[in-house]
Length: 508
Image (tube, rainbow, N blue to C red):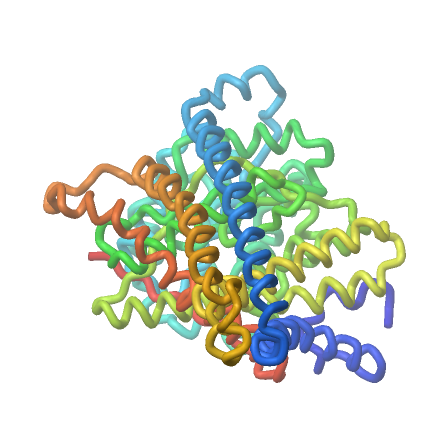
């Protein structure tokens, strides 16, 4: 295999011979590990119920400690985020040399409603960053040409005068080596901007910060300023990604409680990761150096989770010398909402499954580590361990805590059930879980503080449900956490690869 030719691999069929076998085994591993865990708990509960009971107690204690640990991170990042929102970043930038910087903003769209595209561009228009040093690219899909042409024509009429450099591109369908998805669209848009403006103006690539936004992303007023500040103060600005916090507030008052809990839980997870920057990768809307993007030949266009893959692409390309900086600054996005309740439930599950499909990065990263001898062994082990623990926890932990904790009693037989341990097991696990659920109070408080003002057509009862919704967590982390993650890992294990599913956008 040529030097770093593995950077654009999507799945094992892209390889041949021994490499294909190794990659296929790596694809199997996450799903196999999850199912082996469940099989082990069942087998131990039947053949060695005492050991299974102690394992369940120890695991519940581990869950309690982890919950407390992450709860502290959540509170710390909330404070940091509020501080950053209140900081005058324009004033801080005035103390530096920043006039050479450009922002390239890419907005890939498919068939989203016109009002969603409008609100996103309007939020960018309101930002105070000089528009003569901003390049805005709105890219629609040829496969949705009729809808796309109508939307972009409206956007041109409304915003062309607001931006000095506003470009419209159409991403062709059925390009060789691409799947239908965001990666192909944003890559096409970036290449068009490079060819038709950046190269013609001879703008140095290292002076450009590129932000790829989901089309429902509404930025907060100082996003480009805090982004520029972090870029200018980073140790290696080119070898760094910049990750905001996705807060799903655009339509949060309108969505059902189940969707709100899942969406806000996703926000909280990203906030907690921001307090652990050594574990932070890119997700959804993100920013990075245009120089790095050109070095990598842009985003991967042959797989689903291109938003996180671009971080791993960079880590492998730069021989482990790459990082992601947390901005601890929000961008507002849409929570999942469909015209009907059951449509919303279905879409929430499918969105969570698509996010869980990020497990496709595990074989890619481990395989890349075997090929790249320049990355430190310690770095390799660190990332591999975190990925294994993360994907395993995602698919198994909630089920083991809320569904499998009673197995030794049901399968352990009369002899085990005559023991004091069997009698006390439900009480012990229930007590531990009760303490763990105290973390929900922190979640409820912070979620209320993150809410935008209540629309006038909703009463105080709606506000109350925003707090009480956290009682649904035991249900949501199983049915919209473990289940989609387990399905994604099982599909990868069986070689049933997922394509890109576009989350439908709907607002009342």
